[in-house]
Image (tube, rainbow, N blue to C red):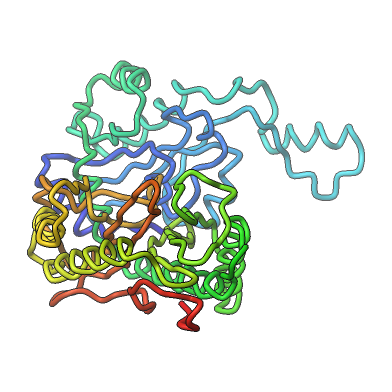
Length: 413
């Protein structure tokens, strides 16, 4: 099932003067169709998987995908019209087959036999896209492409293959479409956050003098996976940036009294990544670390006050930077204080809480607000939470206290 809000997509495309969006990025393909793009996307080239999203909300989505991915696609996205192309992998249904001769017969009956391309044939894929556009009356229209992903050589080939289409950059329209989440997307992000929080609780329980960084990471992953299993779903991935002690690049560091332990972590549910961070110590932190953290708490509170629908992302950044200045950090600069989250390529999605971003916060956005500090010789400190923007404010998805936690005092996570 597609995660696209078709009414909102129609509004955005009409504002941009686009008759459709054609999406090539594998993550964008899955977002648009509800099915994975297939193994042929491993080459990082455009064409092996293509999603066509017409601007009119009542016109169905269509797709081009490999014959290898077709069965899974039809099972997961039966409402999407699919055209298939051949890739290098040959595969036939051999149910009931017992001899080599019957294998060849099975290939012939199913039509999957015959020569195959080295990887995939881009020109065939573009031809199938052209067929879909012509059948839907879009072959002479203005169509947006996710050019932030598409290699220049592939875009030139697309323009040569379908020259009657006016191809435009649809990246901004697609960005704005993705930044507002549907209920299904919000549910994935809630689940991902819940698992990540459980992992932090497990990690905190493992902290003691001598605990290694890999042991902390393993405890976090175990807690996250256990929480997901208990709730009846599986994680599709996880990541962590954990640092211990004053040397930010020391992967062999162990917990020592008073050392800072920063855990910036996230889990993925159906490709949607949470993002959150907490800072711990085992024993009292240094006076400087406590002063820095207090400034971060003030900055986070200032940003949270501005985290309201109708405010700009830039206004949140300005409030947080001003708070750091007020705390005495005149030379502290941070390119962004957080970002949207979702099912993109990386952890962080546009829009960012940056100084020049005038994008407006809207209901049903899910964002991560972060206040970080990195000091070689001191260590890393960070506060980060994930929020759902509502009609009247925000809802925090993370229930953990935000303070600097001394785990030797039995405070837990």
